[in-house]
Length: 155
Image (cartoon, rainbow, N blue to C red; front, side, top):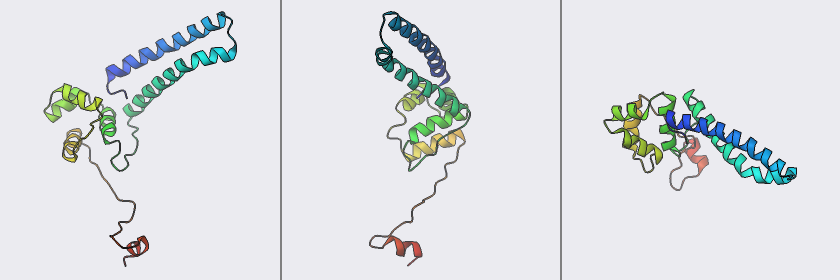
């Protein structure tokens, strides 16, 4: 996951370099007299890396536009916190200042995708970004020993 503008610029540069490298490598392989299938097999790993990098660049650009994925059952909360910061146009430094911590702490946390974050800490980060989290339960709550039918009907 690309987490800041520097990583984004580097990824865009690498993407262009990889595009050129793919073209040159294909021409070299074809010049060696390899068949279409042999060239394809040789280039597939490079193409896979190129596609992955292109997806990361596209994902960062989508986040910068404010297009975020939905958070389900708090899975991916750490990635969502990073995505929110990017979508809001905040740098890691600006978030660190708002939280009263060093920028390197935010960078480390984001690299680890806030692994093991507490609810209290997530709440402080959301507050620092000026974001409110709203949640709702979609499945009916079933009491121990009660069937879903009776719980849903209020019995």
